[in-house]
Image 1 (cartoon, protein in one colour):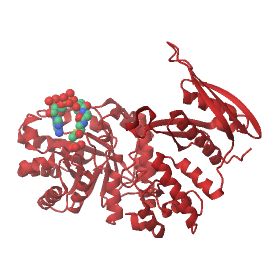
Image 2: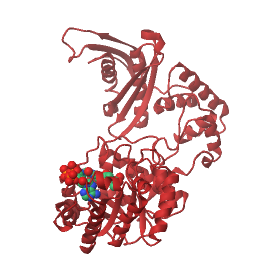
Image 3: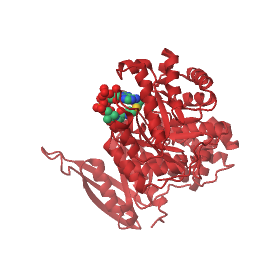
Image 4: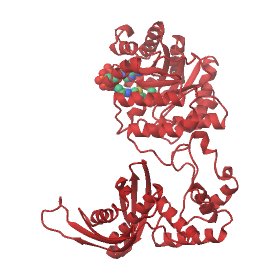
Length: 540
Ligand SMILES: CC(=O)SCCNC(=O)CCNC(=O)[C@H](O)C(C)(C)COP(=O)(O)OP(=O)(O)OC[C@H]1O[C@@H](n2cnc3c(N)ncnc32)[C@H](O)[C@@H]1OP(=O)(O)O
Ligand SMILES: CC(=O)C(=O)O
């Protein structure tokens, strides 16, 4: 569990994903989850990993016990989080303070009240006793060899209400040995100007030796900006969570904070060899463990962060990507992507072709043809932005002069039978006639609905010639009525997502038609053709 992270690095990056991040609605991290996330944070290069609240949450007590034996951190140190002693109790006799010592972490972070209204109304104690709670607890922990971070809860609100008391509280912490005092915008309502002003005033009051930190919540949508404002005013310790997880609207997104400070301001924050270039992979790996889908529009590391849709953007990007990107995505381990839609121009298609390994440079006539097909198809209801594989098939068709076809469908039909009480049973039967590998096949399939039956019949017809389709699995199916004014004769769009279980890749295809089954069949045929193409199968 030990690390050689220096006692006083130039700048602290303090991660609270496992503590404040876990306070997010719907998140429930097991001990195993925390033990899996901690090494990822360490690899990213944060200096501190706050693991949870031992003594209050049994899973956190177990986490620290297991971390001591199982975690081998190279960049970060572990911090146990808890509160100052209870009012009227000696610190040494407070079981929760003892639990913090028992966690055996080099760092202990204490949450303390600095807003007099909270002292009087929430703690129901006196101003003097709260100061004694801070002093006693910090002194005890420092005396036991712990480095102490003091999280000054509701500091900004408290400072605005009674600056004298808020300052007295943090001076008590520094005076008894706290290494850092983190100013917390606990309710998340601050704006950057106010943060900068207050941090500046506090830094002037405490002098330039003691280190101030910033812990921002995102209730006003300013958590990252507030953290940067605090750093601009002198703070040398930033707290946050990966993916901005946290109570209510979350905490400051730590990767965005660090990326802004490192890339935009040239500061060195992360330690070790991982760093920001691993940020996208690490943030997404953490999403897998938390089981919360990554947010595509997340700054820096989201899937859409460097995805370009507008034709005008693409035409400039073709000359120089920097013309439409604030940074090179490689710096945070992300990728630039072109999105194809009715907003695409020739440049978008040329760049998308490049992404797919198809050189279309100088082929203006071909690019124009593809662009016009896309615009016409999107006007009918197709969407290539959401169906990358159907776009690639269309593009290859224009490049090769013929549609890629591993088989030729002659016809298909579906019969749906509804019998009372048969909801759980197969109630649809499909027949597909096609030629594959030079052989004409007539295959039938059953399913719990017409699309399911068609999918089964199509696979049945193909499996002898193309056994590879056994690996292709339909994992998502979305239907959207395109023109709600038309009722039952409206145009329907079907998007299908397919996975190759052998290669662990997924792709999406689209079908459109007035008949939902016809639209589904089109999307499913595209999904199989694309799957065989990706698997490197030759037409048989
Ligand atoms: C801003 C933040 O996010 S801080 C992190 C908050 N995280 C959590 O609360 C998660 C873990 N919490 C818990 O498991 C429980 O709340 C416990 C075990 C800590 C406490 O449970 P209980 O003893 O039942 O108390 P309860 O939760 O009802 O109230 C909190 C108590 O802590 C006291 N308290 C609150 N802040 C502090 C503080 N900084 N220092 C000392 N005591 C404090 C309150 O006055 C209250 O005391 P009381 O029980 O004597 O009225
Ligand atoms: C300490 C903490 O999590 C807060 O004040 O928001």
